Image 1 (cartoon, rainbow, N blue to C red):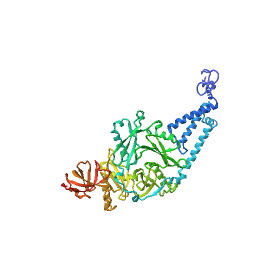
Image 2: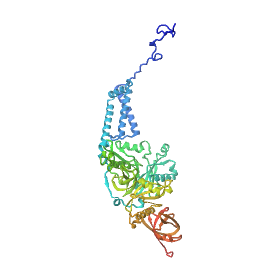
Image 3: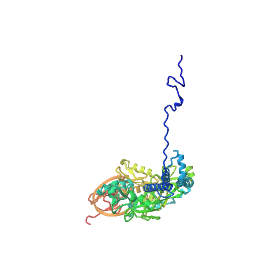
Image 4: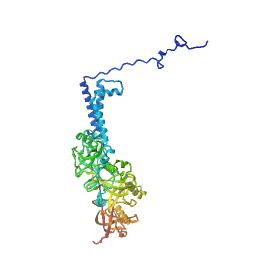
Length: 591
């Protein structure tokens, strides 16, 4: 008899297969427990008050920590308001006992009905953001963006005078920072407690180009132990003499970016000026040496979020915390407009002055700034310099701009020539055997020729030599151990190239006359000319006699008594280094 399965009734499997008892391949699931309903907290009025208190506490904490500007032009303001609305709605869900069905849609309907005010505020925020972004969109407002920077045409030779040696910055920011760090390391009472704030500001101080910066606390513990007295000093780095000075204060600085709580500069500004937007504060000193923070006020001039510009500045006394807003800043202030705002505004002009479509297609007369920038002092103001190049080429400049960092007065000087990076490469190749690194070029007027000036730094980061490169003919490069020697060699090269007359080969600077006895003579051949380096008795510096200019220098001997003339680079003859000598005569011993 064949074996068969029997469904239903009795079988060899103990009752057969019952489809009703088989669900999902396993035993019957346990029935779900009904969700325990949450009870509402108190009366509707008390719930509303609770929601408002929690939202207010959150808002105060957030405002204290994040410091958003209460300004419709500030993006962080919208984040702040959105978070306040979100906190209120979340509190309302908990205090009302609302559970919903667990879906986003259920919570959305609750918020729309029970939190009408914050819900409408969020909707209004979104609409405002969208309209503000459209009103600021460069596609629609290209003409307005191109007019942010008023540009004037300039004549470089006529308007930019040859500056004296004591006005030429010879250090870049990195070299200045190294000198500052070494100087602080010499002060045993400070080095263990304080560090140097890395943001060095270049200013004109008492007629000299310098970089200044504040100290900061080494860490939180050192802030706690020193906060009563504040930061005791600031640093001045002379960009010409390359000397670092620590200026000690009678009363320490208590309002800085390194402080905490209410004395923190950002918080101090926000509590006193809650609606203002600020650029990054910069450290400056006035002519009396009083430390200040210059806090430029940022405004948006195109729609809600476009056309970033500066309108005045708040000056904060770093010692006392006293602050005052100035629509027209005092003349001693050197930096109101940052380099990035000026360069951005020129890029808007260069890109869009012929319209947005032209910037994308055709690109007729479209120009942009080059990658770097530098600063130079002119008439007691600090000017930012950067090159201008065509958007379709990065191999050459078509000119450059000089912009006053206090007033934003900007001039464009047409001058086709090498880019700054090309000039750096030319200078470095001239001394490639020494592996020196060139600083970013500074633009000078030498004998009516636009000239890139660079310091050449060694592996230790300190300045070893100087270089000058002609902007229009960047293969014309000269170097020197001193600025005077470098300029003299450069002027000779200009004359040999026919760019200036031979009579213009005189070195610039103030000529001085002294007499003394020769103690030491050394010689070297530079650019085909023999130079005699003469050290006088009671002196550590050397006179540089170029035999091309002073042929009689080959007759000099140790112990000769001479009267000599030289070019004074600074206020006095340097104790070390080399100065350019322009001539000499023998002195009668009997006299």
